[in-house]
Length: 132
Image: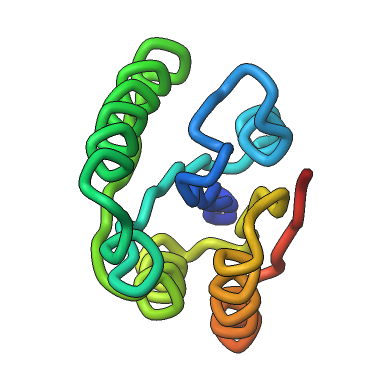
């Protein structure tokens, strides 16, 4: 019996990380032997309080990222909505992910959200790898 392939999540937060050419977490996951699962969570607390013009730009960027991922890697972005600290551990459990890559060069408000998400992922036994 062959072992199951490892799965690694790459969480795109929408704060300066919606790109592929120099996203260290994505590059690390995609170059490993693991299945790479890129995900964006439209977070109730963080994103939905933003001004409408910012949300329109975010939408365009997420759509562009999805298209770029499809072109480069053959798979698009998984989109979830809700609270990231709930959605990411659920996705990790469903995908049997062992690692989650997170870009950390973010605002103070998002850093607080990320800390909550990291705690939730670690409670699920997911190794969190932080990138700048």
